[in-house]
Image (cartoon, rainbow, N blue to C red; front, side, top):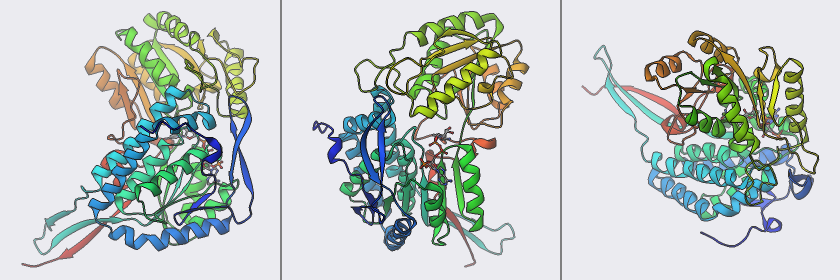
Length: 486
Ligand code: NAP
């Protein structure tokens, strides 16, 4: 591992276009804040539509050669990306904590997870198989070949600044696509650090371009209006996802959408309560609750509701909440002031509707965007926080009586990303898993994310899958050749 300390002043902060860092054509900059101190720690270039079109030009110039690069060579470069990211893991983790706020332990976990997408897709790059069959009529042979879909626009959120980028760049490069990454404005530094590593790993100029901008809508529209761009892969809120799907319709651009979640966490009477509390801590508190997979609603069967609530409140109340860079911090600040205000308003609403605060329930009086880990019991069904993403360290608990009721509660949402189910009865676990409307189920586990598994949602949580072989196919088109040689 590279032991040189992180020096934020020497990190790249300019647009990465055609293999080189360069300032924006407007020379404007965007400030980047440390959510723990509220101080400006750096500024990055603010791309214009002109810069965006330069990035499309660079991606286009590199496209043919990259698509024609031997899969083994693409694989070797991706494996080198994995190695370099692993080498620089500690520096990247510190950078993530500085701009996002999450506890360093969470940031280290993110870097390991993010790097794994490069390794997984290095392995996938040489496993792009086609198909051949005889047509049912016997009159022809059907050959199916997978080809790169073309230039891809990748738009990512601030909550996993490294992993959301590599989960898209890895498969795009394995498939033979060139791309333009637009990271979130709150967390641009990690994206530029990754761009720097990709260049060191030998990714050719123009294959990956990175743009930060204060005008996301304008810049992404300019890119999507260029007909050379054939793919949009977006991770972020359902609200912005809908806007982008409408825009993509103009040029019939292929879309993958990883959108918001509202994960139910269901605990049955027969569950192993130790395991359920442990799983709840992971499902709720990974990233301080700022995860699309975060358990958002806890449905606990009446017989164990009091015990589960008490024990979860003890664990949540004992979490060390502080600057993410400090040793021992388990819960860092939220990303910005608006996030603290949103979480506070949701908790106040639940309280007014009758919820009991078992721990937390307030923002501490200190500098930084902190909110105390909170557990709420007896949450009324019409509370706002059961219907929308909390995106903070708050666990609302609702008791239920029957299996049918648990399923009905779990499905009472427009979202369908992930659900958590705890029971010792495997048949019940699988039955409930089948009936809950979500793309992923964690059965007696608090974590689903795995680069080797298909990640994604149903309903308004998204379209398509990332990770696994499925993630590669999102960047490929099936070409069917009909022929006959008999
Ligand atoms: P967001 O507000 O939707 O922003 C996501 C990205 O879209 C950012 O880069 C943002 O740029 C950009 N953006 C905003 N408006 C745009 C527009 N009109 N046109 C093009 N791009 C636009 O989401 P967020 O607050 O960063 O992230 C949190 C959300 O992401 C949550 O809903 C969470 O559930 C979801 N998420 C989903 C997954 C998943 O895999 N399903 C994973 C992680 C997060 P700016 O930063 O410049 O506004």
